Image (cartoon, rainbow, N blue to C red; front, side):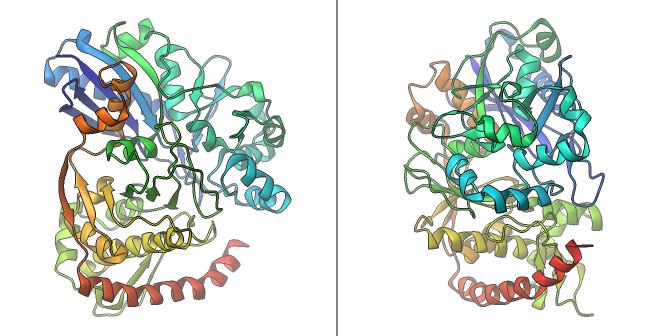
Amino acid sequence: MEYLLGIDFGGSASKATLLGTDGKVYATSEREYPTYYPENGWAEQDVMDSYSAMTGNIREILDKTGISPESVLALCLDAATHTAVLVGKDGAPVRRAIYWTDTRAHEEAEELQRSMGSTLMQTCYNGVSSLWTLPQLMWLRRHEPEVLQKTWKIMAVKDYVRYLLTGDAVTDNIEAMGFMLYDVKKEEWSGRFCELAGIRAEQMPGVVDPLQFMSPLTKKARQDTGLTERTQVIAGATDTVMEVYAAGAVSCRQATVKLATAGRICAITDHAVVDPRLVTYRHVVKGMWYPGTATRSCAASNRWYRDTFGGTYEEMSAAAAEVGRGSAGLFFHPYLQGEITPYLNDKLRASFIGATGFHTKAHFNRAVLEGVAYSMKDCYEVLKELSIAPGEAVAIGGGAKSPLWRQILADMLNIPLRSVRNVDSSLGSAMLAGVAAGVFADHAEAVKCCVHETGVTMPDPEGVAFYEEGFEIYKAIVKALTPVYEMWGKK
């Protein structure tokens, strides 16, 4: 038996999946790392935390399975995009990476939108907001110019980790779209946009196909991971496309609904759907795209609530299940870091509305789950407007493991949500490694061998009707509070 390793760097943890060439998952390992919040609205991560989590996960898998390192045929990485690592000439990060949920560059994003929003949309296929690297670099140019002066290369998280493994300073043509510095049609870095960011195009990495093989593991990488020179490293891609891939969504009319750090609804199309309310990327399957919506703080809201008010996810969910639909009139809006779809407004903030002396912690528990689901419904309505809303989808992400949350979301969207065993971006990366290494003949075979449905959550008609009515109140609260948050944002 030979094996494939997929490594994911998510919003709060790195996960490794060991996939056999027979299509079965033999082991997984996960290690958390922190996100730092030095200022209100800021979010940063140390990429060396990601590297340490990865090496620890690989070693743990090798130890607990007892497999020979020689049997690991190929390795592939993925990570959350829009998170740039600025690297100095010595190969070390110049500063902590600005994580994609960071909103410090909202003024730069507003300036870009006013001056060249249409041009950026036509060139990069996405609307301007503070989550993209271009406005983040503009912020650094204004506030930390010495950082850009020290920068040799700008890489995405997975690309920098792979650089530490192989010495290759490259990215893939899907990840490249996340910088808002890449001309998608010309497939090259835009000198004009790089100049706006205060950098040169030469400071950006080379761009390769996600299936491209990299240089062999370095001696230090072999020492850190326990792997051997025999393990081939491929370029990989973003975490979302790898999750979509692991869910088996590889052809038109398929879709995924993601309850993870961020929330996404991704519809698979055979063309790019360009709209400022969407985040649009290429698929790893040639000719396919996965335009989707984005809720900035999805499972991140649930984690914030847990960490702030205490308890475990299991305890919170059990208590929430004892509360009726609607949390007795308590509403939660999950705008901890502003919101993307459909509002594109960094100034929005999270809120609990409607609290009375009757409400208990259990009501707040459920309100968080329902608030995130309402936000996802807000996203779904955009897809309906664009005629690409799915009639069913695969539920993915850590939050999708909760039967209660799945049911709330199925009722909210009024579509069946299918569950798939082991669905995770690290599995998708392992599958992609298998295609690159020739273990699977193509993407269709990888899906057939590795993706297994385990059940389906059907919408409850009573729940559908209830949440349809509640959604109108949810939207009315957003409309009423937006001027307040806009006023607050000016202070």
